[in-house]
Length: 211
Image 1: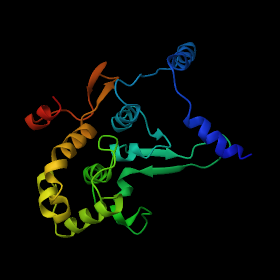
Image 2 (image 1 turned 120 degrees about the vertical axis):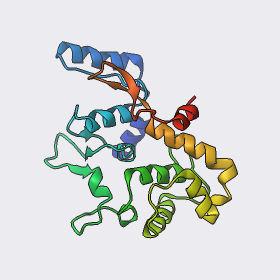
Image 3 (image 1 turned 30 degrees about the vertical axis):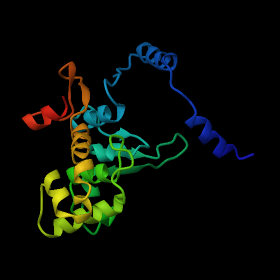
């Protein structure tokens, strides 16, 4: 009898097939609407479009875009609602009095957040490291920032914390691979008319990791 909850479960059970995608593309062509089929994941493609000025913001319900580094996102957008929630990435890490972000992430960077998400669990490392939830990992990074430590390398991360040190043998290389996957996913660039990495591979180490 709970139609609202039932509808949520029905939506989760829905599989998107080629016929559904094709019908949307057909309508887009008929209405002369430009579209892009993401070569990898849609999240990183959308983030790339906003970051490089092809779009002003992303309309989403997925917080993954925040971790990927999307500059501006709009949440809770509904046809029957006059208001939306807007999140700017720069405000997430702000420590100003006007900022409403969680204090766990103030003074951190987008790069820090990606490393925190890798440790606590992400698509590329499901479950993360044992005992390292999002807040626990964020607290560790905050403590390091208080000691004026910036540009934390994975070697430093797995060396400075005793709890992390015990997992170095098992998780070190996996964490690095997950981190570089965040950085270098494949996207399509409308300006160049070809595929490229979200962040260019400009060092030998990252190139070897992705081979």
